[in-house]
Structure formats: C-alpha cells, structure tokens
Length: 273
Ligand code: OGA
Ligand code: MN
Image (cartoon, rainbow, N blue to C red; front, side):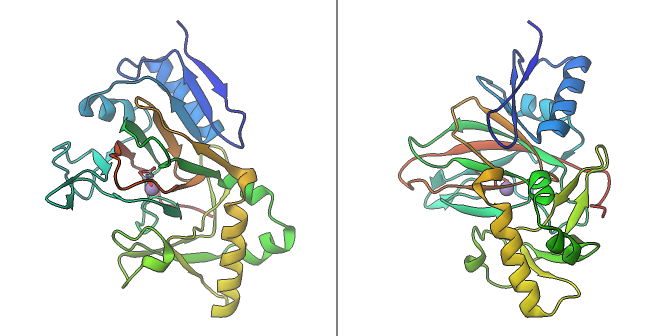
C-alpha cells in the first residue's frame, strides 16, 4: 500500500498513513521529510517499535542525539525515556510528572535539536496530552509593529533541570542566546523562537519592556488558533520539527502510569536570523 500524507484538520500536522515505521524505504524517507517540513508535526498510529527500531526510524530525519540520562527502562543512550514510573520512589524516566509549560527542546544548546520522535507505550486514561503550537503561523500573524520591534534581535534562553513551569525554576542552568525569529533553512520560512518555560529576556531592550514583549509573544504563540492537542493512543508516534513548533503537556494523575520513548534528531547548524 502506498504511503499517504493526510493533513490534520488543525493549525498544523499531518497523519502518515500506510507506513510501518520498522520498514522505511528511501522513497518513504523523502515523503516523511518533505511532510515534516510542510506540516511541522507528523502522526503515525499503531506502531510497535523496539528501542533499536525507534532509533532507526529517527535516522530518516537526521542524526540522532544522545539522551542526557540513560534510563533503566531502556538502557540505551540514544533513547530518552519520559515516564512517571518509579522504583523506591525514584522516577525511572525524565519529565515524570504532570503539566509542562510550552518550550522548545534543548533551546539552551548552541545547536538545539532539529526535532524528535516520541512514541507512546503506556498512557493515562485521562490527560497527559501533548500540545503543539505552529510558530511559523504565529510569526506570520504578528502585528507589523511587533515584528519590527523584534527584528534582528536575540534572546537569552536558560535550561533548569527538571523545571516544568517558569515558576518552578531555581538557579540558572546552561544558557544560550538565539534569534527571536529564526529562518528554517530548507524552506526560508520564519518561525517565532521564544517560549514561556525557558526564554528569560530579549537582548537590547530594557528589562521591563523585554518582559512585557516576551509575555505578549508567549501569549500569542500559545493561542489555541495555532495549537493542535494530541490525545495519545498506545502505539502512536509523533514527530515534531523543533524549529517550527513548540510543545507543552497537560496534567495527568500521578496514580496512573505514563511511559513514552523519544529519539532526538540533531541539527547541523545553529538557528539563523
Ligand atoms: C518532550 C516533551 C512532552 C510529553 O519529549 O520533549 O516535552 O508529552 N514531552 O511527555
Ligand atoms: Mn519537550
């Protein structure tokens, strides 16, 4: 059966239909990468991949970046386990609990990751949805005066280990400055590149103005008109372009298990204006 790409009835995203992610031809790889650029997130259903197969699948989008932590639920350094499953009270995965604010992955790195593929293995009955916001559409919809205000500027982004919302951040972790608006090299599209969780200030503005503009930009970016909310089913894989989208997570009960595995796709260049 030929692979088809079916756009979602949403502000971004497409479903990839008729593909077994364990068995990708060079032609499928091209279909997937073209759809990744066009729709910014891709959804596959009913996939049953081993960790090794998930890593192989990720390679059709680019080089795989290592996880910071090796989880006993995988044992591999190229699989990031996202889970609230605990042993003796200690989480066996990363990002274990509940709601997470909007963010770009690894924006504190000089060369943040290009994307990721996340697969659901166990999901709670309710909540734990992942929200994806289209930053190409968000940038395009900004009023001209705001576009002018941020043109050519950079912002400081900070990673705080384990923090899931801006008010839970304590102390500064690794930091990096990046363009406030970045251009996606393959398409020339411009994408808004600030987020609630990690962006601290816009350089060259006084602190009050920087705060006010960041709040305005984040409110705009998170507007439901740019957002698709993914309700997971076991066997779903969602792939996101981490340059053109940011994501967040809704709350879920600590009494239910959630187990996800992720491969992280590296980039070959830092963000450009
Ligand atoms: C991630 C992430 C959200 C989720 O993998 O980077 O933010 O739904 N995950 O667990
Ligand atoms: Mn994330």
